[in-house]
Image (cartoon, rainbow, N blue to C red; front, side):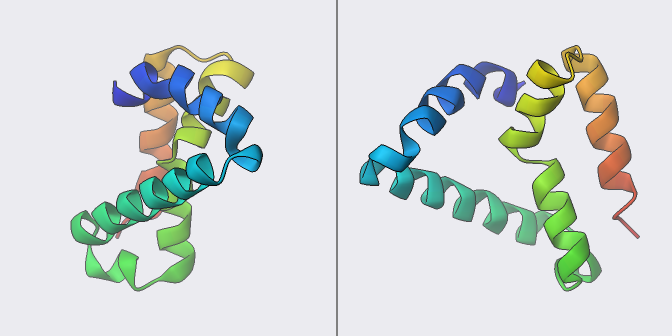
Length: 92
């Protein structure tokens, strides 16, 4: 639900990311914060497995959400099903 609301802001930020040090720094800060959340909520065996952790991080990113919604034209409900399926493949 949050990604659905934030998508327009993310797209605007991406459009200016390479031209603005502030936008780039904010992007890095947000990505770091989201990865920190993942390290706190995922089982240790996933966090310690670099390929599994990186896969979950990618699947749970706004970029993945945007691709599913805009490029693949899935409904929010369909996108959630895809994300759940992908994350489940990485969990013990």
